[in-house]
Each structure stands twice: as C-alpha cells, then as structure tokens.
Length: 185
Image (cartoon, helix red, strand yellow):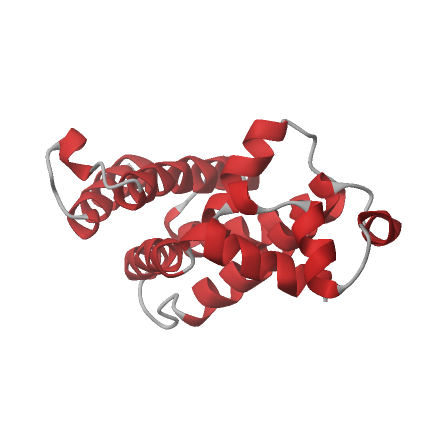
C-alpha cells in the first residue's frame, strides 16, 4: 500500500515531492508506523526502484525482438529503453537521481535486479562476442548501455540540441553501429 502511494506521488510530483510524511498521511499511518515497515525514506525509495527495475525488465524483455539478429535485438532494446524513460519519466528519474544524491551502497537484492536488466543486453551481445570472455561481454554490455542511457538522458532533459540535434533513434543507431563494428573486429 505504501509503495503504491509513493509511486503515485513520484508520478505526480517527481522524486523531490516524495516524503515519508506524505506517504504516511495518504495511507492513514503515522510516519513512525511507516518506519516499522521501512527502515527510512532511502529504504522506501529502494523498494520503489526495485519495482521499477522489475517493470523495466519486463518492458525490455517484451520488446527485445526475439528471433532477430543480435544487432536488431540491441536496437530494439535501446528503443524500448528510451520509450520506457519517456513513458515512465518520474519513476525512471528516481532510479538514478535519488540514489545518486544519497550515495548509499546498493543492497545485494537490488544489484541482482539491476544485473537482470543488464543481462538482456549481455544475451543480445553474446552472439557477436566471438572469443571474448564472459567478463568482457558483461563489461561491454554495461558500457554500451551507459552510452544508450546518456542519449536517453539528453532526450528526457530535452538537451539533444547540445549534441547536434539528431533524433534519439539516429544517435542510438550510430552508437550501436560503431560500437558493434569495434566489438566484433
């Protein structure tokens, strides 16, 4: 109940509008009672973000272009990631902005959810890896996705003009083409 209300607050007001007091009031609890369920506001946010990572994983998995080639799958994943960020901007922002501001170490369960999302990229990238070790594939997937994330962030922040004004699709396609040429060489 608290997580659903908190997600609603984030969707309406962004992560800066989220407070334990607002959540508690909306569900008819005191803040003290809310903290019997969650350690603190950071814990509440981590739980929301865990649910967002689950939703993102399902969103990407459903749109990854199964049966296509590796590059087509990676293009579909990048397009789906950008679409998710556009569709669920406040929750997507919460994944990166709140934790970055707090600087807390991520719990194991949270890291596992994050790894599951990256795993989709690793699986798509693996057929192109040739002789590369699993660790290299893992690192390449994260580097590639960090780059797609950067494009996505520019889109969400409405700053694409800073990098020449190309569309996100054009930028992501060029990124993937060039990355994969170097990765498969």
